Amino acid sequence: MLQVEYHEVPSEAKWLIKQFETFQLNEPYLTELFVPRPDISIIFHFKSTPHLVNTTCTPLEPFFATSVVSKSLEMQMNGPMDTFVVICKPTVFSRFFAIDVSQPNSQCITLPQELFYPVWEDLAHLSTAEERIIYFTTFLNSIQTTPYIPDIIDELYDDLIHFGKNTLLKNIMSRFPVTDRTLERRFMKRTGVSPKTLMRIIRLDTVWTPINADSTIDYQKLVYDGNYCDQAHFIKDFKSVINETPSRFFKRNLQLIKLFSGRSK
Image 1 (spheres, one colour):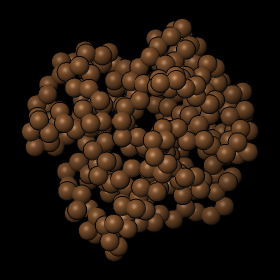
Image 2 (cartoon, one colour):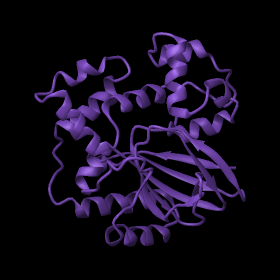
Image 3 (cartoon, rainbow, N blue to C red):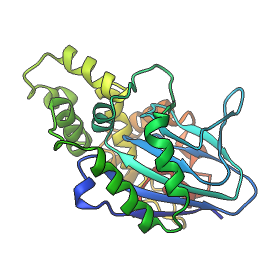
């Protein structure tokens, strides 16, 4: 059985990190669908390494970052697995680490070996999530020479996260003193997706929250929670991101759906 735990972020790291997660798997084999999330994840694998299920079943590196993707990803995991995940704000991640995340169809981001290999090596020798969180927070503070000051792209991302479900995109973008075209171009460079695509991911992200492992799916409630005007629009958005209908998707194990959505509650 796959075990996932969610951990709070120390206050001194919240400028970049949204959440810490740990994955433990003792089964010999598991293939599952990961739904898109509005963030970037730095992932450290310490035992077996999963494969991205595509035409070649691409093996993933022991440490890498996942980009903000507009489509669901299928991963094949071969246990035992011990994984430590750092969930980051994408606009801050790309700017702070000076990493280009705008490459089209790029699902995984290569991290600088000289910076992250020693981190991966040290984390592998730590046995608890608490120790790894303390270590990574200390590492982050050691390379942050000056306080991080958010710019308008960070502010746009925060506004989309907080208001994107209930507000039109034009209303959010209109408050910034640059043209929509300039905002979109700079936003895509820092996140890899457009503001419109991120809003679609955010709206669907709210769908996973009320779902429990033993619950019956109430589609009307999902439409309401996501602030969709009707069920047809919800299904259209769902298919564009998940690549299958809600009814087919929700036949999967609902507990895994909650786990892979990144929701702890």
